Amino acid sequence: MLNAEIATRRADVVSRGVGVTTQVYADRAENAEIWDVEGRRYIDFAAGIAVVNTGHRHPKVIQAVKDQLDRFTHTCHQVVPYENYVRLAERLNDLVPGDFKKKTIFVTTGAEAVENAVKIARAATNRSAVIAFTGGFHGRTFMGMALTGKVVPYKTGFGAMMADVFHAPSPVEMHGTSIEDSLSILDKLFKADVDPNRVAAFIVEPVQGEGGFYEVPRAFMQKLRELADKYGILLIADEVQTGFSRTGKNFAMEHFDVAADITTMAKGLGGGFPIAAVTGRAEVMDAPAPGGLGGTYGGNPVSVAAGNAVLDVIHDEDLNGRAVLLGKRLKQRLQSLRDVVPQIVDVRGPGFMNAVEFNVPNSTTPNPEFANTVRQKALDKGLILLTCGVYGNVIRFLAPITIQDSVFEEALDILEKAIRETAREA
Ligand code: PMP
Picture (cartoon, rainbow, N blue to C red):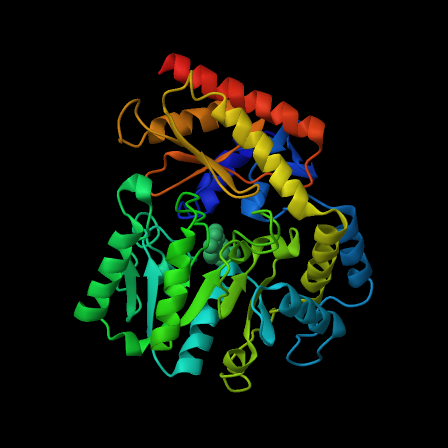
């Protein structure tokens, strides 16, 4: 089978609304490598968008899944529950930051976790408004889409957004918004649009994912916590992309010295199997009435088995430590190119949640063409990269944290070549 043939068939039968960034059709994958249907090997610096932090088909994850497949695959936790769901909940309650009693629910996707976090916050506060941030991404469902702080392509053509959702600007200094600017606009929002005593929750990604890998400044996160406490607003940390060792911690909120009341998780939790979770203060999580939360597939036992194995791997292989080490090496390599590549304006990111941002040289004009050319050249040389950012001028790196040293070095060489070539031709 040829990639091009499948691409033609795909275009004929699959909605164009499901965009794809490569026409590389996967055949098999192992740790940080993917082989396509034509037998070509790629190094995977996307990890299925921050999902296989523990690598493709980690042996411990696969073994746990196989064991579960041999016992049962679905009973619906709401009908005939099972122990591994409870165990994973116990473990997340311990791991998620926050020095208070917690409870957890399992759902299937990140967007669904976000939906449920908002439902829970509304039920717990008896308020309906939610404040999100520009550039944030929270999913493609109706509430997820409304909370997402980017119109194109996420909201285009989809009509009226959910009511009572407001956006405050994210403090991204390099794009001209300081912490003070953000806070002052938030204050104006409270004066002009929504009484803070009507706000159920703030929802924030500790490091914006799709929005460009901008880390929330510590002082800003702490101020949000303060405002939340002052007005009885709940703080929701959307850790769907940042969780499970990506930032060198189990959860990115550990970098801020303040805890969220509710945390959403997905992606890295399942190591390649669909599972998402909401963990939060016990009394908040218990606000909805029995039957108000859940879903047929939420906490599917096979995915739960994978989730328990993922937590073992993170601990046993010290993936937090490894993320810090790999991130340092990647950032060093990118920094070393700054002298010869004037398009590089920033290299950043905690742990192994790293990004490089490109502008037109000596300007503040974002350079999405440069980012896209680097991505394409890297792909041609066998390295899968993803772009992101409100302006599309950022390349983000999301390789499996289990990547072998030799494969990692090979990938860095390809990346360097792709960037140097793009700069030479610019
Ligand atoms: N929140 C964040 C921070 C995300 O990065 C994503 C996915 N990119 C989502 C929510 C939505 O997750 P899903 O695609 O699993 O619905």
